[in-house]
Structure formats: C-alpha cells, structure tokens
Length: 374
Image (cartoon, rainbow, N blue to C red; front, side, top):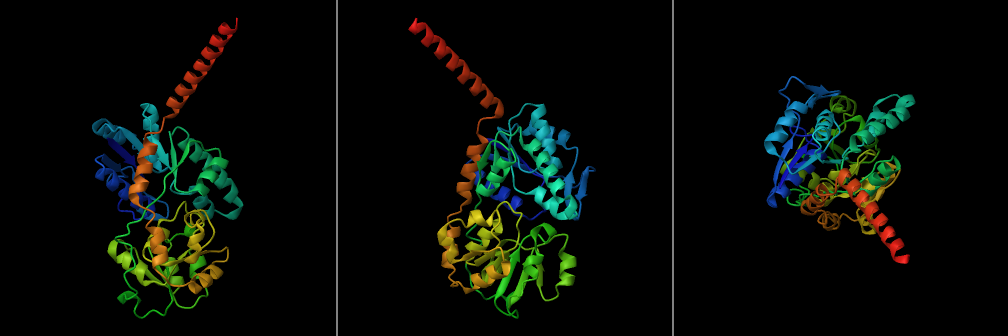
C-alpha cells in the first residue's frame, strides 16, 4: 500500500521525530509498502526560519503543493506527524477532500511554550496551546502517542481516539564498543553524557549545574549552544553528531543524564541503554514509562533531585549487558507493526456509521421482540 507521511520535522533536522519517521519508513519499505515523506521545502518563498531556530524552516500556505502531491501519489493512507504549519495544511487538505488521516503527538509543545514565556503567562499559554492542539487532532482517526503517561495526560485534556505507538533503537549502531575514545582521552572520569537539542525546554542547566566529579559532555545543536558554551567553560560541547560516531561516544561514556521533563518519550534513552550506559533522570513522562519495569532499577535511577540520581546511578554496577538486554526489547519492526495497524483504524465517519447501524439493529431487535410477545 501507499503511505504518505507529512511532517514539519524532516531533514536537515536531526531529532527524535526525524529518526522515528526514517526508521518507520525503512521498515515499511522492507514489508513492501511504498512510503513518501514530505517535509518543508526550504527553497520556497513561503518557508521561513522558526523563531530562535534559524536552521529550521517552517512552510506556510502549503495546501496547493500538498494537493498536487496527493493527486500524483494517490496514497492509501495519510499520516500527519506534526502540528506545525505544514501539518495544519495537510490536516485542512484532508478535511477539504474528505480523506481519512492519522496524527501523532511527538512533542509537548504546550510545555515548551510555557517554558519560553514569563511565569505569569505560563498557565494561560499552556491552556491555550492544548486547546489549539485538541482542535488539530480532533478529526484524526487515531492519535498515536509513545507512552501511557502522555496518553493519560491527553485524555485528561479531552483528546480522543488515542493509541499506543512505541519506539525502537538500532542496536547495530548503538552498542557497547569499549570505553576507549580519542575525544574522551584527556577527560577526567566519570564522563557524564547528554545527547539532544541544546534549548531551554530541555532543562539542560539542571545537568550543567551538577556538582558531580568527572566531566560533562554535551552532544547536540540548538539555539542555546553558543550562550551555554560561553557560560560553562568546563563542559565539553561537541556539537551535533549521528551514526557510528554518535554510537561510539555513547559507549565510551560512563553515565547518561537526561534532564528533560517535557519529552514524550526520549529516544536517546534507548540509544544510551543499547550502548550499555547507566541512566540518571528525573521521574518525568518518558523516563517513568521507559523504565517502568522493576528490573531497570539495576541500571537506571529516577529521582526528583538530579544530583542524587547521578550519585546513585554511578554507585550501581557498571554492567553494560543489563541496559543492553533491556534495549534489545525495543525493535523498529515491532513499532512499525503498531504504526501500520493504527493507519487502518476506523475513521471518525466509519465509527459514526457503525454506531448508527448498531442503533438501527437494536431498534429492529426491540421491534421484533415486541411482535413476538404479542
């Protein structure tokens, strides 16, 4: 079958959404499906830089371009992955042409926005943002979320038709491959590693302000990178990285620290586990779901005091086989099966038709029963 995925997050961006869509498309193609992913076209006049992210382009007024793509590709299923300008154009096009579609909730935008405004406006910003997102997702036949915590949060906020779509990890790239690495050769141990976007919503200062001994390493890019690199001279900021190079940097570290409290999953957690690292994190959505099993206490520590989480995690046995074995339970093949199943979920219109049919059958049954009793 033909699957069209539309996402505001796409190359040249490097983030969890992009890696998830890449892996899902790859697995779909292995199963014989034809997949096309459409992201913003940075060459168009209507593509502008995102606020505070000059390297990220947002494409506005994209409905005519998307209409041409849909008409040419003729997809069997459409998935709108993000709630940005391109995602809104795709949603509105589907409604205009009465095309069923699914959506996914990758990013807690209300929490991100609330972190960027003065505290006095944070609650209003959060409420307004959730209202906008609810409007975006309401026509979707299924809203795919990665964890139970996020599903429960959205349900409390009156989102409907929520389904589970987990994540996977490439255990070939991310694996225990030794602590020897030239980039780390002169750094005092233990090496505490953070991988991800360098931005305010990632709560990175909680990591950078740790009093723990050893060295702190940050891998990733983002709008706050120049400012934080200038402020924290003792921290090693290595910039963006991917593939085998990133895998080796994971494996050569001693502890992975995840300070974010706004992620919906935290794909980097699985990558760190696959590379054999112990984990220190806040008990926030994402980590509490990923490390819900009791066995994960042997290599992952979640504590509301990140300093305590780091201290306790470093005291655990450094046995790469424990997190590695755990990560091997998350495959992109299984995640893709979930994704494909949800694409074929009944649309809201189909649900209404089924409900009407059920009501008709009930009324017919009641009428027949009444005639039999006469």
